[in-house]
Length: 82
Image (cartoon, helix red, strand yellow):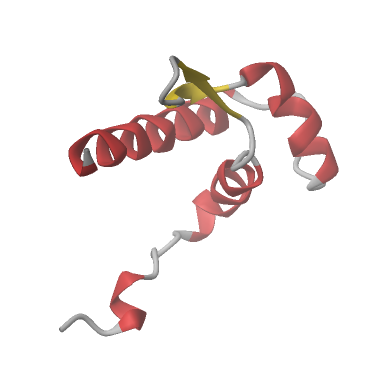
């Protein structure tokens, strides 16, 4: 049996803003079809969410790359669950 503490993500200090922003986007997934399959984040609200979390806007290339990486990993995990 896995200890609950083992399931918490480890966030490196240089990734804290990217992680906070990704978690802030939790309600911004675009879906498709009757089943509501997630297809990606709504990037149109990314900077507004960042501003509301007091994360530097405009976003730099690395933060955007971090968000896209986490998005891809989440989509992959959801696909494997089905």
